[in-house]
Length: 209
Image (cartoon, rainbow, N blue to C red; front, top):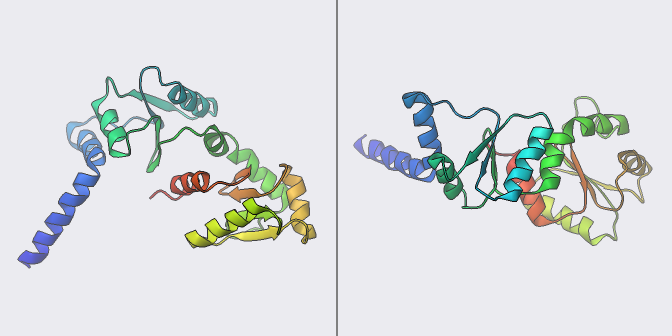
């Protein structure tokens, strides 16, 4: 029994060390009585233009934003250092994004509502159907092949549609209206093109626990 208690204590200490910022935030909110900032947090610094761009974009979508400067907020500085030391750091509940991608932020905060209506109009998902990622591509497109390889490497179920061989896929693609291939649908985000880095950021953001 003593061994199990020791093991649990060691595991708890290791988790606490890896999540110091989360522990401090919990302590401040539960014990000290300092509430966590409401809405999306954007951790920023003086003269960080991408930080302000990210905050402005999210606010422009009607989402409350708490700007937290590392010069005056020690907890914000700890958060930044614990997650890699880059700015801006965007925190939305359990999600962390330590990169400024206007496309991803716009896809998530601005376009997801209209995109959901567009996908319904195109008939991409039937009622009650799992909203797995959809790839619109061709068999000759190198970026399409890279996207297929990425989904398979991640073990993610996805729908692989060839717009040159599947008339229904071509109809959906035309309704969506983005040029070129691949066009990717993922959690009601829609975009064209593919890169591993972009997909890794999107997946980490979407699937954060």
